[in-house]
Length: 265
Ligand SMILES: [Zn+2]
Picture 1 (cartoon, rainbow, N blue to C red):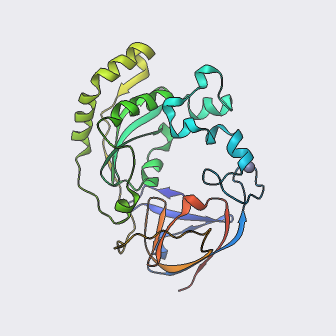
Picture 2 (cartoon, rainbow, N blue to C red):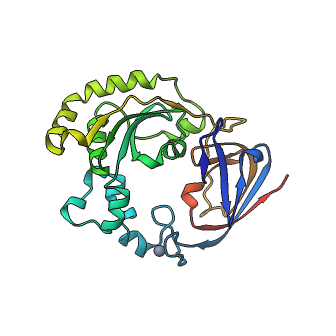
Picture 3 (cartoon, protein in one colour):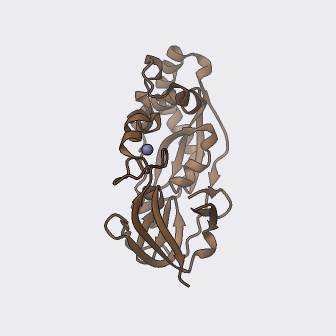
């Protein structure tokens, strides 16, 4: 579900070759019918089950994008010569990354490729985010994140995020506080990896608003694997979730699923 950082965030749903502007559908009744076919988003072959949100099992085992070091970047093994796809690694991991603070369901730390700002923040449903450091590689970003994790969460509580249950935070103040707490870690990393490899930044925070009409009182996820027909009135969109009055759908989770989409009224 591609999105733009407008105010509020402008969502599009990719259906075949067209992109449906979703913000205008808030208030309308929608229907999704999953016909049981899942196609791998890499090789297009049919797969009974989706691995890592859209891949067939062979691709899941083969692609660098599906390796465990993507979830745990501090385990990057490119430097050992064992990257599953070194060229992919050079383009996606051996490039500048941003270590950021975000407020999605409270304060969290995260990392992303420089070019994925602010897409990554929107994906997580952050209402505010601020870059903290720019570093030379994904691996280094992972090491900084590990240092931060002793002081701040690295996960979003998606139920709280979807209820709009988010405390107000001054991320610029939080950034100074966390940077002070990890100062020794940063010194150590610079000694090992070079002074230029980690740069503290004072870039401005970005506030994000989402097209939400009604916040759900109870967050119940729809699962197309169990219930292939889903219907409901769209009450809002946040992160990768469509919030229907009958439950929420994590669109990202069903990447590669062949789904008929209809606007009922
Ligand atoms: Zn595949």
